[in-house]
Length: 271
Image (cartoon, rainbow, N blue to C red; front, side):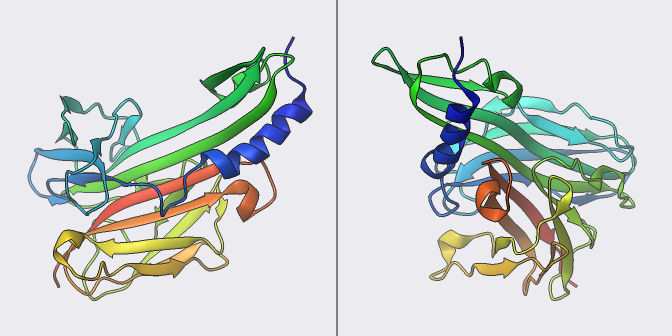
């Protein structure tokens, strides 16, 4: 026998507030490519994957690469070469053999729960499909949260294209209006955010340049999407920039209790 759906639903609502960290509490997650724009017939880009407080400093932990997905210029998956993980970062190489734009992402979606059964505290991890049969009958103090996250960056070989930029319509994601490898310092860049394929209106974002260790003030820009999920990014100086957004589905709009997050590294070039 398994726990009643009403008990699981209550656990979902409670779990969202107690288990999911806020953006202020979490370390920044990022993918940092060795280059974002390249020319020639073939090239290789090396990507660092890490979580840290400072940008882009190796100080906290590596990111796992189990959920790494690379979409090539033709919309098909590309297999990277995993170099390995150290104390502070994971590293992989991506061979660019086709002209166009590649979308590099670590995308995860799963659920985590805690409950008590026969006086013992137990933990469960799995998918939404497994949830109904995961919590046994008689379980109490059920706390469940659903978390989906996307951490990504973009690289282009030769002329950019948009095939890899198509939305997945799962979780919180950014759909570039201004091409992500055609960003110029001093010029506005427009991005659109979607939540499960729908415009993410009123979503708050943080946009900040790398090198925060070397500044007295972090220089964080706090931005909000409009009714269509659109936001304009403005970078005064060239360099690598970090973008972050998060939302709880139950807080953001009616629906399943869920925590969604998105982070990206974008390079703005000099004029």
